[in-house]
Length: 420
Ligand code: PMP
Image 1 (tube, protein in one colour):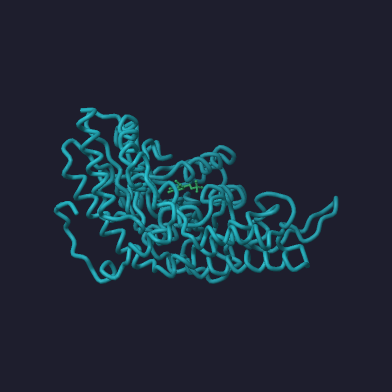
Image 2: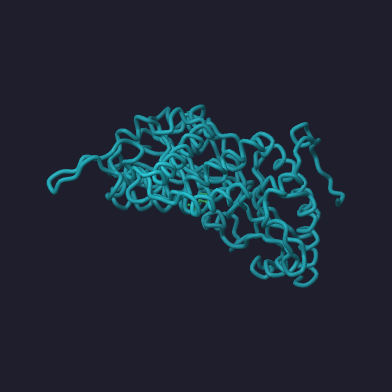
């Protein structure tokens, strides 16, 4: 272990966290890359998958692959049961009062597009405003821009400060009776900032706005309770929380979902169809046209069980400790500038190195077995704000270790020697 000046004391949650045991559940982590042990520090892009999720996918295709909801044979019944049970587990995991408030989607992106279309088109008009923040991922900007274009509403952007913290005074001032929707990240993927989401929702509700929370970077890293938050809509992706790709969730308040028309038309979202008239299905099926990602839903249910078993509070505490260790390590590197230094942060370390373009740095880190992401992280307005074309981003998960951060530290020193 390297000697950095790490500010916090380990608490019980960290001391009882058995990372060796956790890592044993992730086969992909135990490999060498370019002759070096893999240090996978790119979990904000996508998380790795534990054996139980991989085996559930395999089991579905080997044993009971079948379409859901319509069949009356044994395989179809088992597939439907597992797929719908997963919805119940997901509801419980995020504190949704009912599984009928869990809409399966392809991921956060589709969840937000669903709200912007099915809710937005019916409720937002000319003269209205959509309030987003400067730290949003493109998927929480572009669907709203498109809605504004369709309806004549205006996109308003709440500012951030140089630490990457939302400027709450300004946000509060921007909230008016014209604000129809507030679309905000719970946790920023580019900066790691944890937004004061309870307060944001409370303030937004004060002017009658509907709040759409992008929870893509929150649900994998902390205990989220959508009912306690009082979020109107909450979106997240399965693949960032140990589940498969191509599956995600839109949670919605029951009355909001009930009042919404469909998103796409097709099979499964209907009760009856004639050429004259179609009666739409109940919530949530109304929003789930066509054959869904069955194995994705089942796999996400298993991922949720797995995360619950490890314990979200333990995960949050352990990742926080790793973040502090990583921050202390990176601060020891001359010429390294952290982008995103908010007081409340999740496990994201975005940085630039003086005189070295992130794109030149990444291949050198890769040769050392270190997987980080370089680029704009689908948050170009954040890059513009900090005046950088791109950053390198190490993002942490509960299966990472201090040793992997040491490996990043050594690899960065090497990159500096080679490029500076
Ligand atoms: N929002 C945030 C904050 C994200 O980090 C991401 C994924 N990088 C998304 C939205 C989009 O998620 P997906 O690509 O899974 O739809």
